[in-house]
Length: 158
Image 1 (cartoon, rainbow, N blue to C red):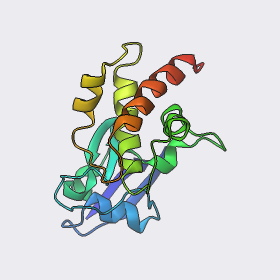
Image 2 (cartoon, rainbow, N blue to C red):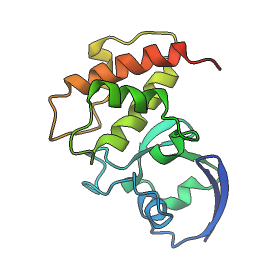
Image 3 (cartoon, one colour):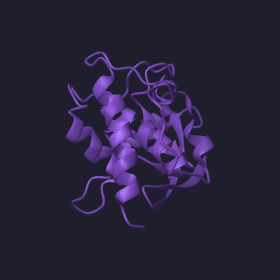
């Protein structure tokens, strides 16, 4: 089955097995920020943005990506510059082992973009990140990263 989609701003056409998950397709393309964690949509390690919506790719069939725009953590880096969210994660020390970080970054990116100009409360951030699990942190630094990302995003000229 043939599908067409955009990944990190670049158009692609793939001949896929209709049973293939989007996670499998993206990892085959060398997009290793898309981690295989639980494979049942519970941990968020495979989260990407599909048409700007945070989505678990392990339970999303690749054929559903036809005509969609997909963004991964690799695509958030512009030249040699991290995105506001990625920089905030670095600045706040929200990265420990790093396995879950790309999924958290993409979920955070979705929140920061969706609520641009509307500072989120800690409770709203916790609720927004509920689909992502981390075994290394107490989430405090991740919440601080989202708050800082909102500040950095506001300071970034468009």
